[in-house]
Length: 65
Image 1: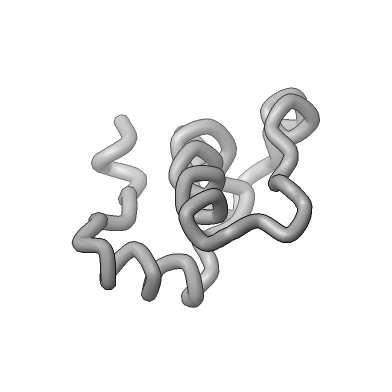
Image 2: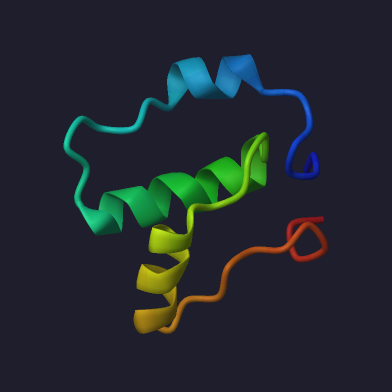
């Protein structure tokens, strides 16, 4: 995995568009996959808070190795 702030994985982004008007569960799924495959930016705080409420751990660069 590339660390946050690194170059964008354009191929992944083109193949994995965020659904329009995505519900929070869709946003969580998308951002988890994004962290594992691109990591060009961090997971937004709103998504991290929703993950925490669900008992989900946010991925870290080390956890994704």
